[in-house]
Image (cartoon, rainbow, N blue to C red; front, side):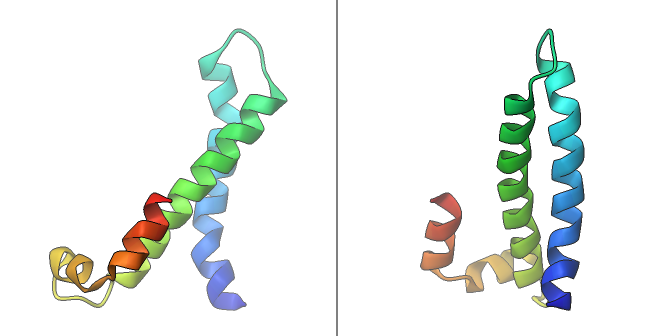
Length: 79
């Protein structure tokens, strides 16, 4: 549980900030629906990036780490 919390804390905080600020920058008024949508979209994106960084962290280079990942992992990220 502590590893999951450690990995997901940064994406959650970044997403919370983006979800709170983005509606102010995107429109004329503040919309809760836009805030929630931006929060969810940015959380998915930042969580995928955090997982990708976690998976390639011990490789000799980023390219070598990316080559070791399976095709199914890339398909999951795209889906």
